[in-house]
Image (tube, rainbow, N blue to C red; front, side, top):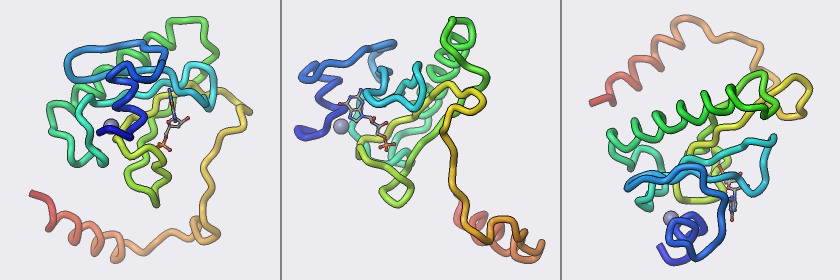
Length: 141
Ligand code: 5GP
Ligand code: ZN
């Protein structure tokens, strides 16, 4: 895709610090890291949403993320834990519409966090969970 930042990185039209590349996946340093060591794992094929990526390629992305996870833990990059994050769609926080998996080191008091709604602490009834469970399950192939 011509105006996609990540396609431009893949095609070497924009610079990036590339940590991994094979025929199907590229991984590079995020330009605005949550913490040092923040990496994006990106399929080379231009797909907006992760569900549009075929399962083998999705598995490959997670395999590479696992390799990066181990490498971060082995390195001297400050990391007490690691987050995987994938914003799938604009409402989910996606800003670059070429699907990508974030992987970034976490440590106590690093300032990063997720914000929950006020009623998050009110747990739903089992019946509601069951109902939603069935609804989604019925849509599964
Ligand atoms: P999203 O919100 O779509 O999940 O995340 C997009 C990510 O892409 C952000 O973390 C942002 O910092 C990163 N990003 C945006 N533009 C560039 C760029 O030109 N180069 C790199 N390496 N990362 C970028
Ligand atoms: Zn793209």
